[in-house]
Image (cartoon, rainbow, N blue to C red; front, side, top):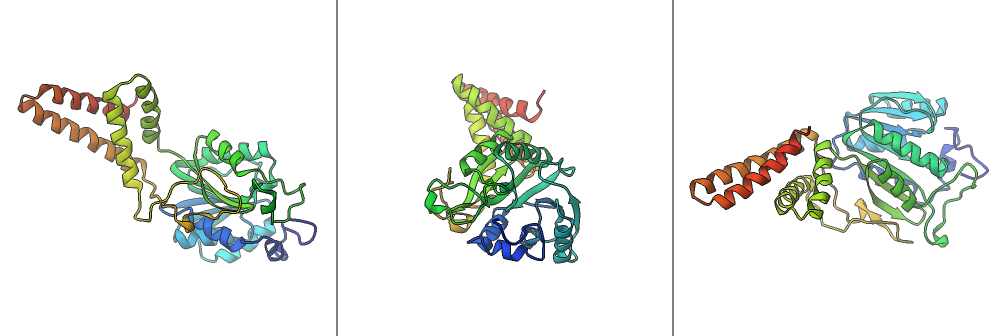
Amino acid sequence: MTDGPDAFDPATYDEVVAEIPDYERLQAEVAAATTGLRAGRFLDLGAGTGATALAVLDRHPGAAVVLLDESEAMLAAARTALGAAEATSVVAGLEDPLPAGPFDLVVSALAVHHLAGRAKAELFARVAGVLAPGGRFVLGDIVVPDDPADVVTPVDGVVDVPSPAADQLTWIEEAGLTASVAWAHRDLAVLVGDKPSPLYARLREALSPALKARDRVAVAALRSALAAVDNAQAVDAPPAPRSGGVVAGAVTGLGAGEAPRRELSEGEIVAIVRAEVDDRREAAADYERAGKTDAAGRLTAEADVLAALLAPG
């Protein structure tokens, strides 16, 4: 990070990370932020000596990993560390085109802070492009904290150009991902960007105009379907509010009580919404037989709203 050990030399990398307070915690929180995701294939950006990939593989045994780093020496060390794991490596920088997706997961720890602000935003857009629907981007890195007293990791301001977490959350959102803070402590943070499934995105996009138009039928149908998907994604854990930003000096994250979520496949989301349609049509038929035509008509209209989103165009 500062003048001294070479951050790109595997022989001295341990000396570099020794300068980072809570390094081990950061790596653990990056891995924890992948909880609930079924990662068959993931990309590790700035893979270094393989510490992040190893932590992720502990959570996703059997996953295939693509290691990307600009240093062949670092990649060689990572391949050795990963042993029998299914791993391929790509010599490239973070500003280069990314390996072809789709990836269920993209992770990066202590690498992106080497990019200037605009370059970070451009990288996040490329990450979104290689993520599979329902995939996740997990970024663990140095950030500029709100309180200068929380700057505890040495940076040189030349090779190291961290950005505020809030800026990076904005860039993740601009890339089309749903951004959140998984963990933050002083000048370290783990940020998450989830790529919505196409159907889930259509449901969310349809809700806003329905609310503005005061279309009670559409609003009821959309809210019910979104809630059904959200409930299916929930995993048993003590509930806690999501963090919308980094509070100076605070410790937050999955390790500090945020409920993890299970990422659903597009097929699972389609099945949930199709069940919402079928339930309404069956209930409408029951009401029709009972002579309750108004209720039958309302439920049929709700079913039609969701059915149209199941088959767009």
